[in-house]
Length: 284
Image 1 (cartoon, rainbow, N blue to C red):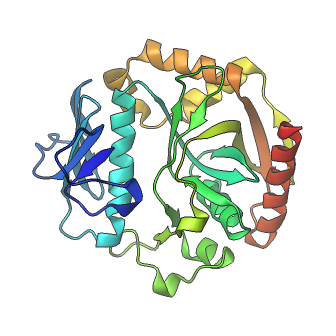
Image 2 (spheres, rainbow, N blue to C red):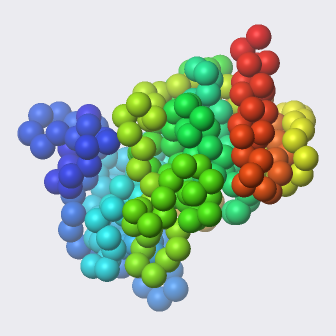
Image 3 (cartoon, rainbow, N blue to C red):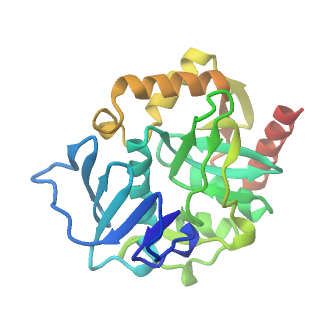
């Protein structure tokens, strides 16, 4: 249960005084100094974000100080980023990726910036599948043999051309931040999977003609380290040894594939078909 003084319907927040797992409040945060992005200790992290500042304490309490210029529509995005730190403090592995539920299989897309993680996820949703998360992917390894992908927030970050290609209208979707072209697109309840899902595969996106190749476990682990969320704070949040252990276990338990997809928005449907075929093969 999440208790929040902010309006966050997607998190099923409560404003009563009963027990809760995470408390989210709006308030002033001591800013990191100089050029620092993050400051504090493992149990008390303070972070500078383009949308504001936040403080994550002991994996239980989140204090957020918003930039006054930030549009209300961007509130879930900053909260989602900040929650990534809460889950790091709780000892979870957090990857920089976007996830979709395809025909019952949770597929996580990772890759370097600009590879199309959010775009492919949005294309999956537009084809009738469900969004699990965008940008921040929390892996629950309570059962190390059956990792779970936790639900994020029902929003996807998209550039205007990608938004148009996946059925959206940039003219009616607010920019992520004022003066920025990227949009923050909301999905409805039917398009969002709000529960934890067994992780079927991790797909590392590369540009090229459609094909897929599974990585050996050792190489998969190296790639997962590369795509870990907020690598610069891992040592402070959960410790490097703990992080590497989580990565190694995940690489053993879940297939990691390099997926080549055309860098052509007109071929998104083809990319979605490829991903659905991979999901079907894994189920078989």
